[in-house]
Image (cartoon, rainbow over the protein chains, first blue to last red):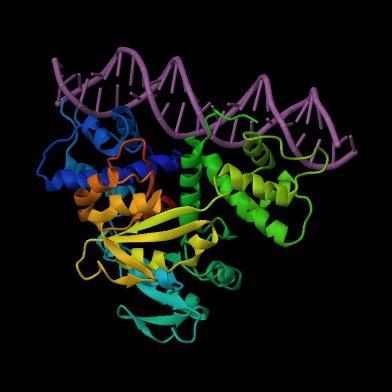
Length: 210
Length: 210
DNA sequence: CGATGTGAACGCGTTCACAGCG
DNA sequence: CGCTGTGAACGCGTTCACATCG
């Protein structure tokens, strides 16, 4: 029902979690689901679940609960997953290559449709049925294939050399696997995935234990 | 100076970021650094930087700023990075294998010292100089090698089969790459890395744009 | 009755503003 | 005088509690 409200990042993460749970619920053939059930499966509270959903509308029936299949399609639409997204992978080292061959993205609405690298050995070769382009071509390819998101898996030292190309490529969002903070205009959304930082957070918590 | 204070996760992430910046500052040969300088490089505010550091002590000199090399060692100690951590990788599919060969962990204090899988083709083989053990051996190996952290990169369907083994293995922390929510006692710290959820958050933000 | 939907209360992380000190 | 260190104010996300309605 509302639209211009500001939504917390944390609420969006939880919606992703609810979505997965609800898909299981649908698969299990359940016809209703309560906020309490969703809460216990996702490690939060029933009030939190209801509040999160109420940010976007009134999807349940009082006294009954929610329809799992209805909620699935509503959350998909909220998250923008009622359509497929075209993705480019930039940097085909070990991690980049592993991602290209990972079915999990395809299964959830993300199609890897272009690959970029700078190595003369890789450019022109084929990976998982896709031709590897030189990063210099990113603008043209992004435009031609209508790509919106880039997954950045280059070595951190390579970032300065290519960040301008990414900025001007027409890409709208970047999933950044490098430890560099990307300097991009805020018309480009950036999300960071940083394994080392997660390990450091674990290290901190384990150290706290004494 | 304080010790039993409750520290926000967000503060810990920022410390990781500061650490990387400070290492660059040291490498650049700077002898002082201000909270303002750290803030602009890490995308936060000077007050935030000072508050984060003050959670753990008074490390600066009024009127002058901080000593980068001093701060590096203090933050390393705070995060528990003044020692090395022994890690096991469970699940040697594409992602797991990519991680094993990644130098970035070693460079930052994390040593991958054991590998586990269930596939009869992989168990017994060698990867990057390490023998692959069957997951059934995890308790013994974790104990023998004094491993504290496990990186979990198995397919999500495999989680139920191995979660009990992990629980009882003596592992103290898990970096969970699967989309499953792990049911582990809270004596075991769990951190989740979930690429699809990050992509879904990007999808949401890009969809919001209209 | 039962479970949702939601204002209001709460708690916590961030920001402010200035005292403190080199 | 400059920059840190920090109590206080603030804002926002979470939790509470109950009115609401099938």
